[in-house]
Amino acid sequence: MSNYSIVPIAHSASSPPDKRDEQKTVTPDSEQKAQQPGQPSPSTHSPFTDWNGFTPPQRGVPGRREGGGTRGSDCPSPITALIPESNFGRTASKQPAFFLYIPGTLNQTVTEFEITDENDKSLYKTTFPLSINRPGIVGIQWSPKSDFISLEDNKNYIWYLTIKCDLNDPSKDQLVIGWINPVALSADQKSQLQRVQDPLERLKLYAQAGLWYETIATLATLRLEKSQASSIQNQWNALLKSIGFDPTQKQTEREKNKAQAILDAPILKLQTNP
Image (cartoon, rainbow, N blue to C red; front, side, top):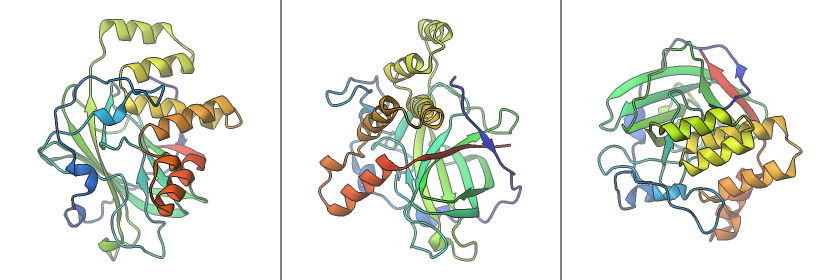
């Protein structure tokens, strides 16, 4: 729905052995009371939807925003998925973009992406190289011509993104896990989006509809295009704070520093894979 700024790179057809099961440990986020997704409720602390009001269903795999695995010399750690604290987000797109904060450099590092159903049955898996020359935020998107799975409305899916830091040592993999719930827009919502061309106005509609993936993709694109605009930076900060990256709300110095680093991180690119 939004006009993404895309940086294409080559696709790797090879897929390394799946060691994901070794990474499936329950995190504190997964101990929240589970429920079926409901309607978004307004937040008193943010102009955005209360993204954290959505939680995944009880069955399935717990989400993980922060990368697991041991620290490796060839890979920055930990990577962080830019998703709500519940690890759950909605979309009306069949091919949403997924955003990561990576606290270091990568040089053609093998990255694996997988989508499963809510019972963890694999539906799509691919690998691709990922390169960045400084810490920052990367968006991963797929080409409309790719064989990316067509997400069905009102079904829950789990997505896994693994940076293969050492192909000979899976314990160094950096893995993040999120839940995604595609929804169908109402006729009125579709009509409003068709009438509105200004991305800031569309942003309001996405947020009102509780569409996490469209909201963050739209703001990330605006930051890429208008990196010096303080109003865009302020909205970006408000969005990240609304999902728990607010340094003033953190208890430890490590948590404060990490939240601030994510707020300050540049958007490096939105990368598409064929």
